Image 1 (tube, rainbow, N blue to C red):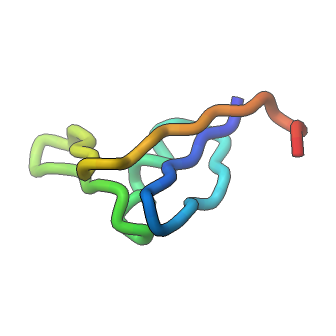
Image 2 (cartoon, rainbow, N blue to C red; image 1 turned 90 degrees about the horizontal axis):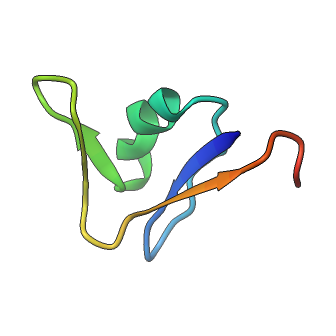
Length: 55
């Protein structure tokens, strides 16, 4: 599977792991990792998944 976060204003890049998608979510304003490493999504953020190679 590939993962990306989508906000009402922007769409993130597809990443091969959920951990990578979480790590880079702040670039589009989708959320952030707190001090403990937990992902905190902003309101309106949606996680999209797709099979690898489905474009």
